[in-house]
Image (cartoon, rainbow, N blue to C red; front, side, top):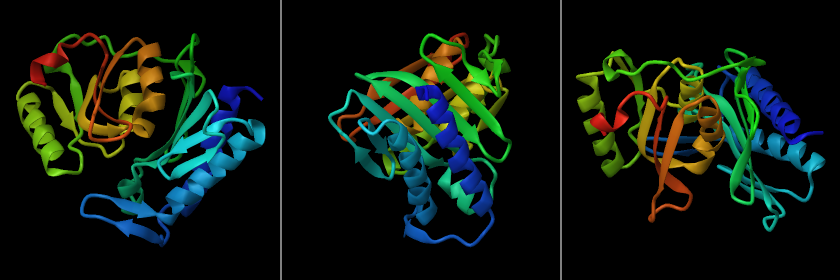
Length: 249
């Protein structure tokens, strides 16, 4: 089975599992002020891990819920088993499964699946960005005044302040602002032309790995700056590469 086909199978099966549990009572493993960890997060990643390692037992899994497989492998699957866990827990149907494959440091496959809308974004290095099998591209919009922007605010005081400051500046100019609760879906929406940019001061690799390849293949631009204080943490600016997003940063 191909890498992309395996990623799609893992994402859709995990998505079906999550959708089957949506709206039901959930076991909370950890509750913080701005975040929640569910038993379903781990169960979803375990399902994804089984599918991938059954097909590629010499590969590595690197996910939000831990690692598995051969960590010395040149092939590393980057997994977010529920991106938008808080939305999911509160019964808000805006969450997804995100799976990417990195080979020797380069993302070569990306899949994002939204079980609520049954939308599957997929991309392979050198191929096309697709949504449910149809090629997609970023929006043609060139003016911030015409744009819809997604600003994330993080979970600590510093990133919340920078995010809210950006939100305030951008809201004076953009057509609409959004805080949606899923970075992966935000990037999928940029790749699809639904939104025009996404900015956040602190985000984890598994949130944006698949989305990075998707946005870039669809004609957009993604700039990541590694954070010294957080392993595999980044600040991100993703856009359709047409609007002057730096004007509101």
